[in-house]
Image (cartoon, rainbow, N blue to C red; front, side):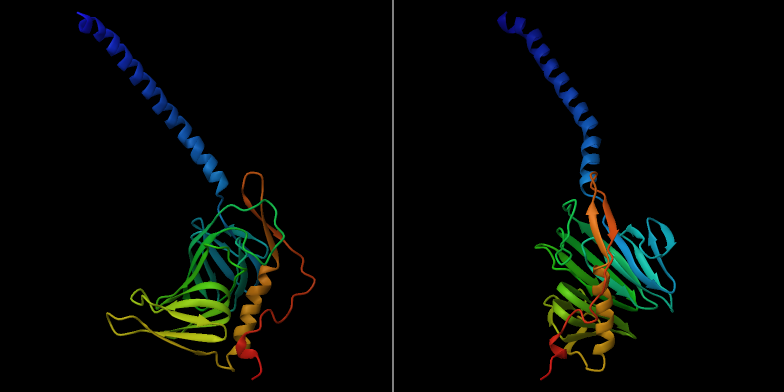
Length: 282
């Protein structure tokens, strides 16, 4: 009889627990979107800023094709940027990295994620927060100049034949006919001759890697040597342009966490931004 009389009480308890669980579940459903919105506010969309341009260039961002104009900014993730045969453009990512697209160049920013950073910063030589960058060079010539990368950051330039994982510095990547040239003016990186090249090849300041197509089923061929003296001046000029772009803008976050680009007036930009070992006298 005691067990029989306790059954309604047990059912009541179970019913109460079920009701409590249901309410908690509904509360989680209601709170979930709010939590997601708050998280999204803390991780805003990284930006790319137009520092300078000549001729015509365009960007595809957010599904829209827009002609580039100086001091404009766009969401960087997934953006495609193209210069016309007589055009060129220097741009800056919101992690402080500058890049220069020479004439008739096309890149895809395959990945650009960036952790939140302080609302105001004045150190333009250091990356403000950890970021991960992957840029695919479809054609043309791309020069890159990074600030000092934060611990844990990655920066990769991809091509159809291979890639370079840049550990920081200044370089120029060119698609020259069927080959890819990677000239490292300052810094260090690891070059890979496609997905089948598992070991990679260390590239140091003053060196140039040339990637050529390998036999079917094998890694592409990577040859590393000193940058030829006659190629150095135009390479350095492109890298200097990417470096100078970094000094034209300061990125800040507002109270909502949105990234804003603030143009910086630079009285004078040094002509020679870096000195590579290949330029030093013997």
